[in-house]
Length: 524
Image (cartoon, rainbow, N blue to C red; front, side):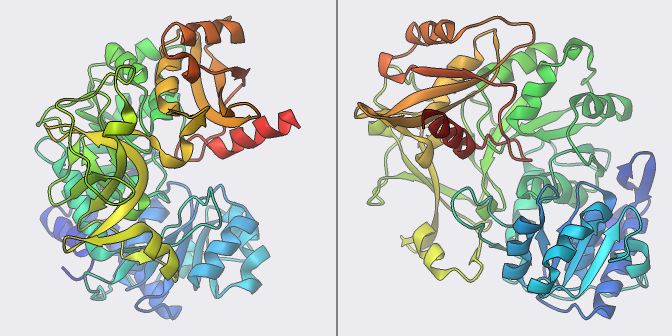
């Protein structure tokens, strides 16, 4: 294997007339798709893009993203995906740091590129979806569909996504052809009987994010299935697409599943065609999973991964059992351990999940570390950052995830929380996810997040931000009393604030640093 896209070339040979992409009624076969990627690769070559050159893609989920992604790889380049919600200041760092020579941007976003272009190495701007005086149209940029794919080694970089940058500047993550190809194949294997040529995948997870890129887009195209991109999340639109087109595969983040079950017509959605629903990005509240499965015949299978691991490392296999509350077992070829700060391995509990009220989590938990073919090459031009996240031990290179968890004797792993999210109140450790799980069980709670805020007496105290369910009437005292009757006193939220919505990233993660900042500002 010399290039990630050789896998798709094999699909093109086997199923040239099968549906590859479908977007708003416009269907593209694998033969047509391959020609489109060749045309984009030709355009890149004419623009002087060669092996290892960076090409930034600044688009929502559109067919042009898929074409530009694989066309860049065919040309020997490296894809730098950028969040289409980013503004000039944010993309300025990504473009300058990566040294991208070409940017493919939505026409409405081209002004942001122009604003920072002089401070970067960008030479060409390609516009999608409308005219722009400062960009060459996507169609005009493309050249001949006949293009011979450039060979790249397994250890050569293919994609350079950036971490979310919740602390400090975002870091470029170097993912190789082998990292991404191996994880796409592993993602195919988690589906019963694999992804088939007759499978249809809902493509609503953003393609700039590694989850949507690998598990949804690449795995679907590797398996010869059809990919149905959606530029933005809308529960009604997405569920209608599933029903109308009889889609068979869906991956989402917890917030999406929670959104579906909270729709006023949730009981009317026909999701009978789905044969697998995957969830990742963060832990799904158990109550959300149960409510979804109560409404629909589809089951949700939880997985786990990070940008630095391409992303999937664990999954609850439909064929190998499922433990609700677990991130699943490590995928074949991936090693996982739970270790202390001194990298001493922590043994398993007999069977999980444990009763967190009856168990001293500090005795059974540690940091989750990963080794496998999917683990990144390193951070771009940041050797000090590499040194912080890698440990050489037992002849292997282990990646530190920063997540706290435990595992059981059956091989299932459980993530309790992010290390940086843990709250220390009067000497007691509180894991926000445990409190959030409880809050989701309250009928008046539609969404919730728990953070630690400064407290003069306790050091930190627990605060809950809550979105009320439609029509619900519940007070802060009601929430506090509910928690006090179900969990230890030191864990209950001493402060409760009701909000219209929680700040989330495009991939559905709650931006807890914003909540902490708001809470601290309100105390000033």
